[in-house]
View 1 (cartoon, rainbow, N blue to C red):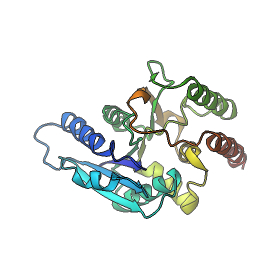
View 2: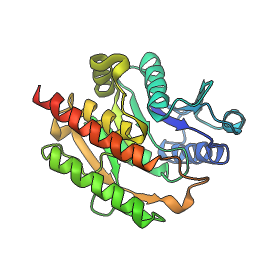
View 3: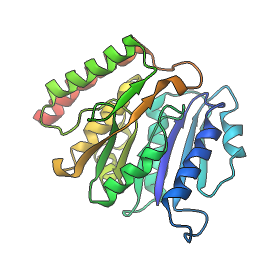
Length: 255
């Protein structure tokens, strides 16, 4: 099974078109004789949205499976990811793959199945990277570019042996066993970072259970100009959270 985890906060205008796009790409990926529903399961975690995110999710009808999980109030990206991961690990099995991507339409679902090909070839962690050769960013402000490229350099400086260029993009694929090993080690403390820095925390804690040759990146195009709604990333909280995460992670590696 291919699980697709979609944390969503006030994505009422984006979530149904995204699910329809995922279904379209899934139908194109699998042979026509594969029975419906396809072996693709989207897990939407509505993180206390104040808009119609849940309603628009329930309206979706397509050839893939769908689960909607809801937080009564907004708890943040880390909590939404953790809720989805717990659900998938409980209902999945060793043969499954797990993907995460943003629910705001800046990450095109066609890359899910390019990442899936990498997992099929034996990788355990795969990343859709803006910084891999051939990757691009569109519609990103100069300030956000400085932040993302600065984060890339800091991660590389602090963890030069880790085989990734992009630690902060949330578009990833994991083998079930890799993600389960990280969750089993950390339990409810799997994601403790503040704000969007939790994406880097998830990657660092998972990479501890994966050999470098089983990690891969593919180039992808980030289309920030297609984002529906305002950015939800608190800039300075994310910067501070990333710096604290890196300081903690260096201690983990030393120990």
